[in-house]
Length: 238
Image (spheres, rainbow, N blue to C red):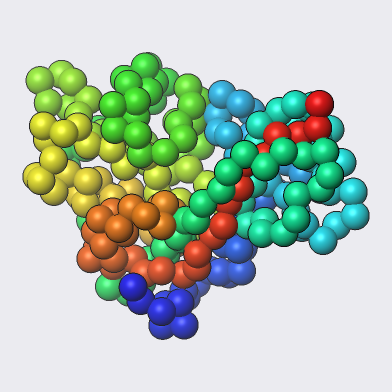
């Protein structure tokens, strides 16, 4: 993969990407935010993400428990320390964050149609079939989503999710098995990135570190590794 030191990130402050969910909820997605100065989250039917301003803040674990409730399962990104006493560690993993470089050649995809609230059931169904990552009934409200229909059926999709200031995440890239190897995923990503750039933002993506095929495909389009992220799942004290 490309070294993070070689990745150009002009026209936007890349430091917000170190805590992308927090800077989304404290910035462009503030209207979705539930919580206070230390911990915020999206409504459960919008996205599963819980964001912490800083793990160095006193009282952050108490604020997290108060926000999500006792005995709740919660995923935490960017934390790699000890879990406080009374909290249960459920598992963890590693992901990667990729950002656009000057090699990304974006362009609209004429066949793509914009998706909205009326398409939510089909969007949930294609996500269930392809498992591209978390997607909830109102996730489509976070940004622009587009899809490809064949025979009236939604067979491919991509859209916008996290939105830290100056950046927009491309997510929910899903293509049904019988429509793969036609370049649909790449063309959808390039369309979404085109419209992100038209707004003056830069595009970013996240993927599981083990999803080497997807990572390689995104690098081929013109994305490059910026950082690796640790994530853990915990249960709050009952």
